[in-house]
Length: 229
Image (cartoon, rainbow, N blue to C red; front, side, top):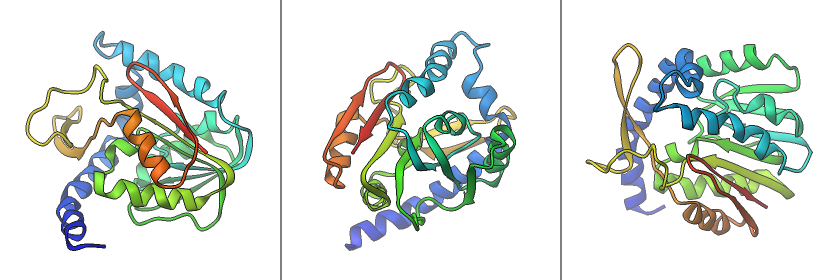
């Protein structure tokens, strides 16, 4: 690892700590703010998000063991159980894990609290899944994370990523650092987090660079999917 990479990692630690605090504090209101269609401006995104889990699951091969990164409140965990017999659901927020456990309530899901920037799977999986997580990963940290997932996914397995593209209508106008966003909770508190709207083509290239040889792109308006093998 060169000095530049070390410097970059040191510099992004404060915002990553703030990002972790944000999602811990947002856990209780996450589903209401992401899935609610009370606000007309949010409705198209919420409607599309509701449609994505069954559409994505229909494209994945049935498997024994899945890994879900940044599992959150369980929006994707329950649908994943239609594909995988067992899931290891990992998140850095104990509040998110508690909500997920209560919502999904299935013994086939095992939960692990971990800092995903320092975590690596200790056993091979058939499917690694990450929804709306990679856009919160700084650019210099994404290649090693993908390499770790390539090591985790057994031969013939799949990596599935769902995220927001650089063409998303929700992408704010560029101002200041384009890799950061200011997010506000319902109580008015504000947090700065990493938010990188990558193009599907860029992320597909990074997947290939990590050793995945075949990448399928699933297009959408607010979201896109990639299935790498």
